[in-house]
Each structure stands twice: as C-alpha cells, then as structure tokens.
Image (cartoon, rainbow, N blue to C red):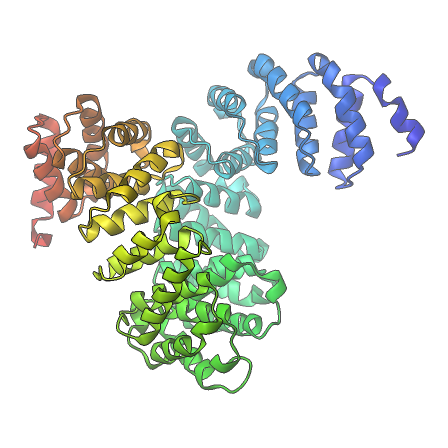
Length: 575
C-alpha cells in the first residue's frame, strides 16, 4: 500500500479498518507499516467496532502473527462488553486469535466459553474444531464447554473437513478429555476419507489415539498404510509423532517402522538434520526402540564402518540411538551392549547433558554395572559441582536410578547438586520425578523435599493431575505432612478431579489417609470422582481406596457399595 494511503488510515471508519486488515490477512500478505497504522487507528475507535469488526480484526492480526498488545487488550475489553451479541463465528475467531499468538486471556476466554455454551446448538464444524483447538493450544480447561463441544461434534462429523477432524482429535487428547467414543468416531470418519488427509492429519490423529489409549487394529492399520504411502511428504514432526504414537500403543506394524527407520537413517546421515528438532529426534528414538524389528537396523548401524556406524556417531547421535534401545523389547540385546560400550569409549566427548542421558539409558536397560554408567554418573557429579548442568538432568537421572531400585548414586547426586536442591528451572514433571525418586528409595533428603514443596506450591496451576497425585504420594510415602503443600494440592485437585485417572484418584486418597488428613469437602469430591470411574478401577486402586477410607473412617454408603461391587467383579484379578 502506498505511503499516502497509509497516511490516510487515521481518517478511516471502524469497518474500513477491520475489512482492510482482514483482506491482507486473507491473502497472507504481511504489510508491517500498514498493520501498525491500522492498530494505531483502531485503538481510539474500538468502541465503534461491532462484534464482527472485533472478531475479524483479532483474527487478521493473529493470522499474520502480529501480536499488537495494546490493540488486543482493547479488543478484549470491548468484546467483554459486547460478548452477548457475538455469533458462533465471532466467538471462535477471538479464541483462535488468542491461541495463535499464545495469549492466555483468561477473562476473555471465560466469557467466550460462557457465551459459547448458550449458543452451542448453532456451532458448525469449523466453530467446533477451531474453538477446541484454541482451548487446547492455550491449555484453557473448561469442562462444561468441552463436553458440550464434544456432544455437538459427534453427530456432525460427516460435515468436518479433514483438518477439522485432526484438529478436534488433537484438542481432546491434548486436554485429556477422555471421550473415546468421539475419538473413535473421528478416526472412523477419517478412515473413510483417507485420500483427502495429509501427513499432518494422519500424525495428529495417531498421536491423539496414543495419548488417550485408543487401541484399534483396523484403524491403526488403515492409518499406517496411508502413512507409508505419504511418508515422503512427512515432515520431522509428523514422523516423530507417528513413530511415538505406534510405539506407545505397542502396535508393531513392521512396514510402517521400516519406512520410519529409512527416514531416521536418512536423518542420522545428515540428510535432513537441520529440519529436525531435538524433540523429534527423541520421539523417533523412543519409537524405533519400541519395535523389535528395528533392533536389526540398530545392529547394522553398530557394525557399519559408514557414517551410520557408532564410530561415526557424534555424542548426541549416540545418545539418541541409545535412547531408542531403552525399551522392554530390546533389554539385554547385543545392540544395547554395543551402544553401551560405545558410550564408555566416547564419554569424554559427551557434554554434561549427554552424560546424564547416557546414564539414564543404561539404567533403563538394567545395565547399572556397565562402566559407562559409573563414568557418566561421575561426569554428572563433576558438572553439578561446577554448576554446568541444568537441574532437569540430575532430576531425570535420580528418577532413573530410583526406578532401577539403586540408591547408590541418588544421594551423592543430590548432595552435590545444590542447583537441584534449590529446584531452579525444574518443570512440573521434574519436580514430580524428583519427589518420587527420593520417596521410592525412602531417602528423606529434607532440603530437597522442602524445595520441591515450595516450588510445587508456586507452580501448582501447571501441575498435571498425575504430577499432583505423584507429589502427594511421595510426601505421604516418607510420612511427611507438609501442610501448605497438602492444602495447595487439595485445592488444585478439587478443581480438576474430572481429569484424574483412576490411579491418580486412588494415589491421592491414599496419600491423605496415610498422613491422617480429614479434609471432608475434598473427601466428598474425590469419592464422587472415584465413583464415576469405578468401572475402570484396577485391583490395586480398589485395594488402596478401601484401605484409605477405612484408615480415616470415611463412611460413604454409596461409595463403599460401588467399591464393593467393583471388587467382586474383578476379584479374579486380585493377587
């Protein structure tokens, strides 16, 4: 647009500004000066924007990835005032915009959710899919809306285009909405239109099935066959997600993994390394190690004098290949021992992070007595003392030694790791892993546990249900009643019990009973949540639940009757 035209923008009306922004975004044309001028002109006129203008402008700026904070705040404030007038499409666009520019605007999203519930019957396929995608992207959990969108989606799946199907599947899995009937219907609908799906659609649907544990041989076989045909179009993320998904479901489809193996070999040889992220490499490693057929390729790589052989692998490559062997199917294999030996020879070339990863692999495949494990552990200790290692690595390493039931390296690592004891930089998963490690080995390292408790309280909103239950279990297992932590977990769990898996519910209840906590409102909530999932209860969960309610003398007739009925139905599974 000419400079003269840009100069005239301050004289434009609200609809002119909105329409122009929409037109350039629709054409995927980013004109920075133009969009900046529109934003500046729109701010003082925001009260003149109708609901369509507000929604369109938010969508346009997000589409060209321009996060103009003052404009987005102004749109949000005005939208809150006019939210009752928004149509389904107008509701969807601002939610989509928030997600696209990573703006977790909770007041706006809360208002959009409430308005969407009132007009849910008018939502079309695009509205349903985009709203679910937006909520999942910013991890905004609104169970009533999610349930309503799910119910609205299922009878309309024939109207969904492929991307809407895959986005919907991805969203419900991302938010851990345990709606397997909807997911199965989505996958069935996708299979009927295989020729219309692209690589990202296949990888997203496969990932969703793995995330929610939907195991269906016909559906997985159909997706596999289509993925093999399109493998040349798969990007690194698509390959990583697909391989991880099939490995997680233990679906050993040999042709698919041969195709993935060929892609991985190409990447290992440097063919597409620049396009592949570290997470992609990790996912491929997990998946390749989960299928026995890939062990053959691993052995060829071990023996080969080419760049694919161990002698040519850089430390990070060696670490990833080792990671791929850390699975039940390849425990004790010749390839694993060869990789372990290679790790010992190359440990001096590893940085601290690779040393921790290498030690984790050897612990995972039960090679604790291999020299490489001790060498790697010493390297980690040295890095800790010199403050070279981020706390995530010792946290993961202590988890590995605890999982293997070997306390000999856990305490030295924690003692040397002052950075670990302050838990600086630890994410929710590492916090839970660290607590679980020390509790499992019954090591009361009070400075670390106090630090974990403080950090967990500060990020309690970010802890997943499993993290919450694991941390609660860990402190109870070593009989530590940390009242502020317990109250924070109780409050957070109370709000999110609908997302807890049966084991999370049983572990949390066991934790409260073990330290003799009588939190009546929470107990009522957790018993209600448990009753909804009682049919999924495994024998250990049932036994722990019965023990818990007896220990704290919690009398709830319907709850006890439900537990009794489930125990009778599964009695043949009890040890």
